Image 1 (cartoon, helix red, strand yellow):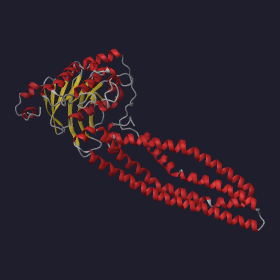
Image 2 (tube, rainbow, N blue to C red; image 1 turned 120 degrees about the vertical axis):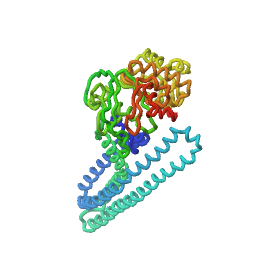
Image 3 (tube, rainbow, N blue to C red; image 1 turned 135 degrees about the vertical axis):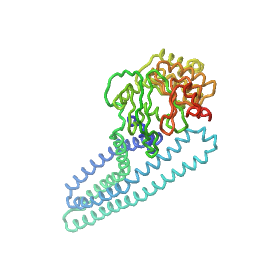
Image 4 (spheres, rainbow, N blue to C red; image 1 turned 60 degrees about the vertical axis):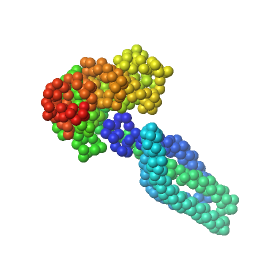
Length: 481
């Protein structure tokens, strides 16, 4: 799953809650079908083979009559499989939707509580569960009917065996003792058959789960992080976007860029400004190669990034977002994410935190670097989370730094501490920043104004401010910066 491109996760059916729900449900169904049910199936099959062998030895005529009725039971089981196959997938989807509502409510409990939305969430959750209930009820009705049909066939085979046995006794072809022996064997066999047929729903669910898993495993990602194979990579940091056209895979009708061209020299800083929704963050996403452009090129040091090993490339790019993503583990472990699969010493971690202006507040916490930050970092303030995220980027020691509204959600005191950390991090690195605050962007080497998917104006702050009718000046005059 983690090998898939970011666009795969943008689809509604692949959001985080539904993927987690599918993983849990599929693994449970597969374990139930393979580990638990298959062993019972093998046991019952062995029982049937022994019983029919003995029955044919004792009185083959009666055993043959019972065997003739078996196709009816097999047809009933096959009909159950066909009838329930669609329900299994529909129930799983409906259950995933209900799980998604619950997961989002728990993850955003503060928002739910702030708006007194508990009743609304419960109503939505009940509506989703009603879909599960309706699907399950329909499935149960069909399963019950087919199970009753299979039981009727089984008892009909009893009656046929008894009748035929009585005719053989009447004609002195067999004796009463032999018939009773066979009939007892048939009863044991019927119990095995009945138990085997009752396993059908679980085996069907297991088969559906395996199908879902193999579809995921067999899917070829559109952006392979391991292709082409490459060893260590040296990056200077020149960035160039050449005539890029782009839209998000989940929003095919909404074109973000039509003919975007942009260049940033190694070691220089570029600030992207513009109205909300103009595509500023999309430029960062293209540089990280979260997505590929529809046409045009994104190049690093003159090479199309599609020709570079993505894992090696991303090792040289640091990303700090507006809402820093922290994991529900210790501060130390969160900073260590900057090393990816690599390792770092305690000294490296402390140095990274110090460079991010985070060491002092971390040491003031009761647990220090071992403090668990909670889900999505809820135990830390916004400024503290941002500085931990910056420390993570510092530890990575990237050649290219991408800042996506890194200070816009902070108060003035936190912003000052974070901005000082960012100023130190930007030295000697190619930096592309998205920002709305003049204090953040005025010292950038160059500023690019993005409008309707194009760069309409570019240059240093002093040059752009000298054009009273320019796009940059209009943003300033309307207090967009």
